[in-house]
Image 1 (cartoon, rainbow, N blue to C red):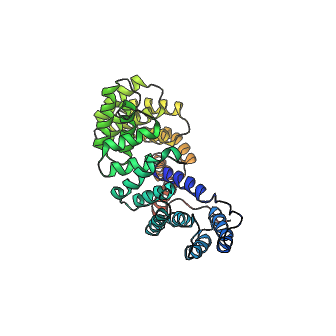
Image 2: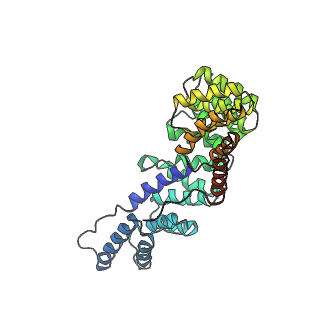
Image 3: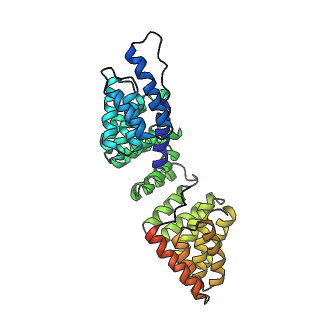
Amino acid sequence: MASQAIAAILLAVLAVASSGEPQQAGAQPAAQIAAPSFASAQELAARGRLDQALTQLNQLAAQSSEPPGVERLRGIIFYQKEQFPEAIAAFTKAEAQDPNDRESVEMHGVSLYRLGRASEAIPFLEKAHAQVETANVDPNYVLALCYADVQRYDDSRHAFAAQYGFPPDSAEAYLLAGRMFLRRELRDQAGAAAAKALALNPQLPLAHELLGEVALAKGDVPGAIRELEAERKINPLDASLYDRLGDAYLRNEQFKDAQQALDRAVLLEPNSTGPYILLGETFLKLKQPIQALHYLVHAAQMDPSNYVTHNLLGQAYRDTGQADEARREFKIVVDLQNNGPASAPEK
């Protein structure tokens, strides 16, 4: 999710950087010469021809009167090329030229975040956040991640809440923050946030589920089952709940309970591969490899690149005496682990 949010920021900023301003009549000859070159660089950048655009922008940057917007676009191109120090230098120059260049300030902070320098990124993102009413995008998400990285968990919660329009100290804000903390493997903080959410609203959907996920992540299977069963009473039609509950039952060797929960997950969300894979594993545990094959073949058709599925398929074929098919599946597992999914041929 972090990469998607940053990509959204980048696209919005690139749109601003590529919008351009028409040159007024009567401008100086140098500006008349620069404008077509900047417009050309903008067009090249928009078409993904970054190196050519950067060449033109570097020429413009070397002029004694650098056109507005050049440094911002240079910074964005460096960012897209993952040359973050160069991007920061360009955004710094853009901010010096125009202290109100909110897009450059924001991307300066995002670039620092991508370098793992969260504490340095925060002032830039806070400044962008202060101007959010005029912004094209909401910088709260990356700012919240930075706060979490420097252990400012309350500030992180407030930033996440602002992105979704929740009151900062509401049950929903705590639950949202807990979900994000778990994604960053901050298990203790995720659990504490989910527990606070439930204290504020004992009937809040998804809070017990999050506590169950935290328990699973910590290896506390009985605790996970307890929380997920509590979630089922509040939120009985959530497919992901039954997926996680089936996983917990399977780990606890409650195979019949796992089968029932995973069947419910499949009925509620037939396009998710997870329950099919877990059902295959459950039937292998129940010594029913033919039933396992039914679900695992379907899972492999949905996602051919999942080596876990192929490994379980190999076991199922082996248990049904289909040695050639088992060898094929185990070979696929090795190939996927060594090489990853096969790339599509170039056109």
